[in-house]
Length: 271
Ligand SMILES: [Zn+2]
Ligand SMILES: [Zn+2]
Image 1 (spheres, helix red, strand yellow):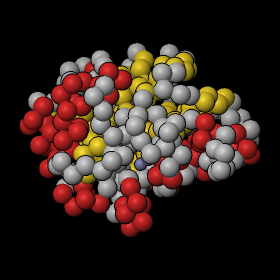
Image 2 (spheres, protein in one colour):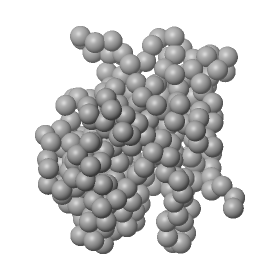
Image 3 (cartoon, helix red, strand yellow):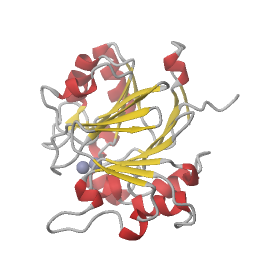
Image 4 (cartoon, rainbow, N blue to C red):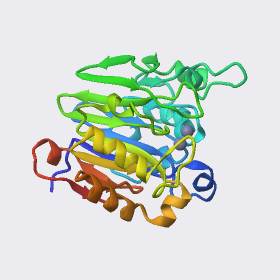
């Protein structure tokens, strides 16, 4: 079967301190492979080595989006820029991220080294509400409430794509407004059931958000150890039962064909 050229590939689907230390799942983020652009979102540890295990070439990445400077979201940025530019031989690619990642903070250095910033064609520093247009794509930074003040989520929209990604955030009443009209919603759900952690969402929060946004497809992602122990597949099933929205639990290496969604043919996934 021909490989779809409009898909999401999950490189690493773990999150939080425990999973970072035991690597029961990696935290390499995910790739949007669109007909004209390849976007790597939140390249945490394992982003580069995880990508090389798929059919995706890291050298073909066009855009890196890092939503905040936590290690499980930004650790591999330098390695990824190195791969996509052949260490500066091909000056290319775009980084869309926040100030703490790009410039650092008062008491910490930036996640991206100056050496690698110089290898990029463009760098966009964004705050919530900002929009970046690249070719026919619009990337919008969305609001989060997380323990990193400039953390953002994103909407990625264009002729072939309508994807929202919450990144790390606690649930708040107006969160759904950030993702109104989105077809595919990727939600970072650290913990199962109603086991709330102050800076992240749990399954009950995801149910409320999906109920309000009503996407065509919801994908839960970025699991902590308690979530992995509870089995994300069962949590996704519960969310689907409660919301009536098709819900998938991401896995390291999972590929989700977006063409099926756009054409109303249902969702095809492969591992
Ligand atoms: Zn995280
Ligand atoms: Zn975080």
